[in-house]
Image 1 (tube, rainbow, N blue to C red):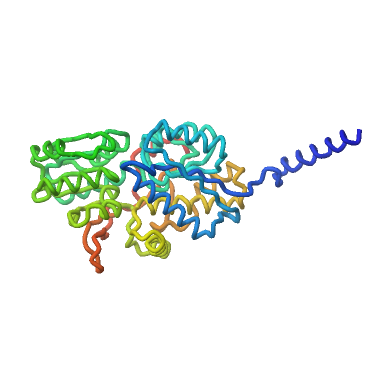
Image 2: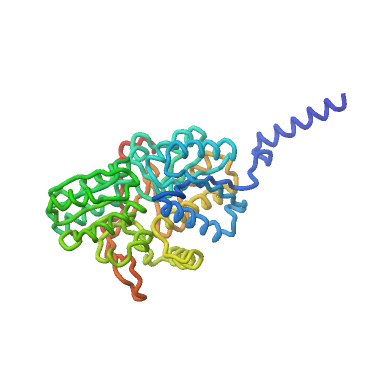
Length: 394
């Protein structure tokens, strides 16, 4: 009888704690699943996201909102099936509170449904598919980077403004590649001499370069992130096309990871970005200096997005006072985006993609003789993506 009474009393206590939001279910740490591309041709992008994210955790003293941070890192191998299996493990076995890290949009589209079904907030540090910006927008999906079309729209406007009349466009044949060309053509209204789609991860572009040469363009626009861009630009210059054709790309095809591998042949290439290492604000100066000190290389926009993704999560955990189990409060705090972005002021649109400025950069030599990007000026101010109107979230 005595044991039975004790059991009833214990059950009542637990019920009371749960009902009042007490400590029965309170988290003792913040668990973050960082699933990214850490091997293969796209590995440099995932490594930069991971390193930027971990630098923000270090800057926070290893704690978000007073809770210790555990980052569980995994490699998606740039394979949708591997990504789906690994995300299931992170969600069900590791029971992560947040997820982040995916580079490629086809991976994001494969993983998204299981993440959203589990009601786990996903903070994208890169992938920004048009599907999740429009009709398939989801309250559990936040993107601190950009929507796939945006940087390409900025280059399309630049190429148009500079008076180029005949352009060849080239991108991988996957969701972000198609969004890239769509975005470019939304603002470039001149002649498209040829539209070329390649295999994702392709490294030999001899056939495509011959095709481009035959079209006789005055400019060429490429979207080829990571190892794809490195190989293409080397082959573009080696084939002599740079003498007659001006090369443009989004920041991902002309960032520090590509510059480090290609070097001086990239001098003079124009590109667009929403971030640059020479942006003059305190958060960015600290980020750039410490990234260079800790990792021995200049940060790329991928690293900056990983850093901002971590800041976003840290701010949300802080604002819910560590109660990460309170999902409605966490979503509200994430949406408020009360963190000091390396880009300066940051805000979300109704679809939880950024409304932000985009800049024109050119690859040049800095005062130390390093080949790097220099910001030339602003292309767009407070630019929103073209899909937000189809999103029914308020």
